[in-house]
Image 1 (cartoon, rainbow, N blue to C red):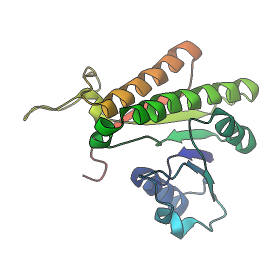
Image 2: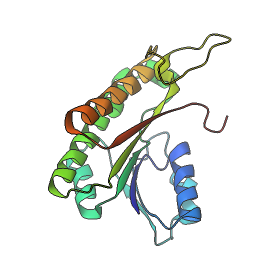
Image 3: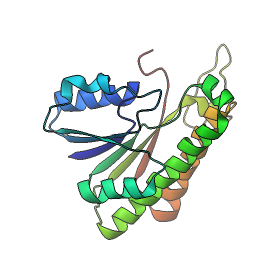
Image 4: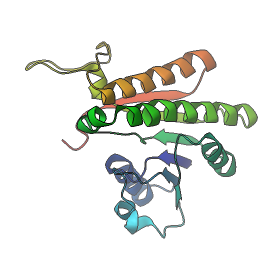
Length: 187
């Protein structure tokens, strides 16, 4: 399987890539802009592996992202790329809106065009989101899939917005997507 990973140099993305390269025979294309959260050194151990390729790029650049799709023809896209950290979102909310909302819309639109020109019934899109979209937990509370969205920061609002875009593409275009709302991945 050929997998295009966005944000593969971040903590979660790089651990996913290491697991894929070390445990499976999947081809991984890592598309990352290497912002504050990305560290190429996380993947030094697989950088020479023939099943791994790194491409520096911005998910908001529709031309670059579309070119990567059309050139590599992935079977799946796993979308880890995002501006993260609540505190950073309070200081720079527009950057979060741009990357997390516009970037996700760019990816969705690019994939839709790609699938319209090269149909693949087995293609999948995995949108990796956050439990922050549900708001704050009380002392004895927990989240379930039916918990209503209640974002409380620019970060959580931008991720909730991106989740809603993915759902809209699912319903409107029969887009093959899954959304995860991770919580304490290594907690």
